[in-house]
Length: 303
Image (cartoon, rainbow, N blue to C red):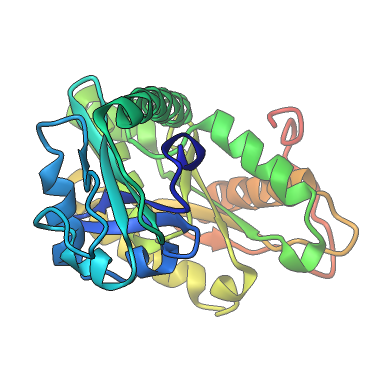
């Protein structure tokens, strides 16, 4: 777009939260655009809310249209503003500038307007693809990530050195069938959503995955789980989150061992969870790191 406009500098202005910010900039005046106050960025973006462009024409004296004074004061001798708009939605604003006088005319600007339209359409398509990919990896009931996303995360963990890998925590609701029998399946769904929300808040920013049924998985930095009382504190807090359903959780936790694959770490956490549920429901089990306990039957084939 810079080449088409014959300009030497440019920036993309986007909306983050409620503020207009420079997401990317280039050229000798790029940093000057990025340094503009938010009010200047807001004002320039507003100039092309309802038009296809706004530009400085043949003006070369340092004066230009109202709203570009800040950029002109930093050395811009030609300014061109273009909206990125697709499907009626504003995606951002392109700010182009030139450090030397340059006459801009309707004939020279029109091809750049068309390029901006094509760029906006491409950005909208990219956003849609990312949205669909994100939705495909979300659990429809609880909103946390799903089994497919967990499989990808474990595969990525396996490519890391052991020191860079995370511990695996698996939690599920004790006697979930009884919860369903007591409060009905809609109530059981609410219990699952309550546990998902609790884990998401408790372990922000680590993502939470619904592995299946009432089982949820979190991949945590190993230092986060170093406290011996970790699982006890977690279960106590979860009991409060599930008090409306009279439910508790059991937990299995495993930290990567030397020479161990991510699948084996997951399988140890899965086995630890089963041990806790069979022997002391509502508790947690952290396998002794000096040994590998017998794996839960089918733990690896479940991956």
